[in-house]
Amino acid sequence: MGLLDKVKEQAGQIAEKAQQGVAQGKDRLEEMQANKKFEALLQDLGAAHYAQLRHQGSPDAVQTALAAVDAHAKEHGEPDAPTTPGHTVDLG
Image (cartoon, rainbow, N blue to C red):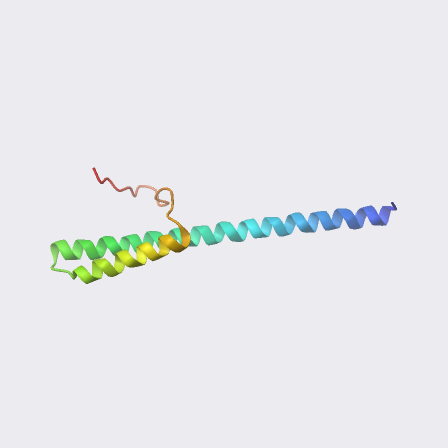
C-alpha cells in the first residue's frame, strides 16, 4: 500500500468520525429541545391547574394542558428528572 493510499484511508476514517460526532451533537440538541418543551408544557399545566383552583379557571384548560404533556411524553419520552436546577415536585 502506497503512502497516498494510507493518507486516503486515514482521511476517510477521520471524515467518518466527524460525521458520527455531528450526528451525536444533533441527537443531543434534539433531546435538549424536547426537554425544554416538556418543561414548558408542565409549566402551562401547573398554571392551568392553579387558575382552576384559585381563580375559577376552566377544567377544560387543565385537561387540554395535560393532553399536551401526555402527547409530548408519548412522542419523546419523559425526562428522568427536572432539567432546570431547583425545580422539584413534592407529591408527598
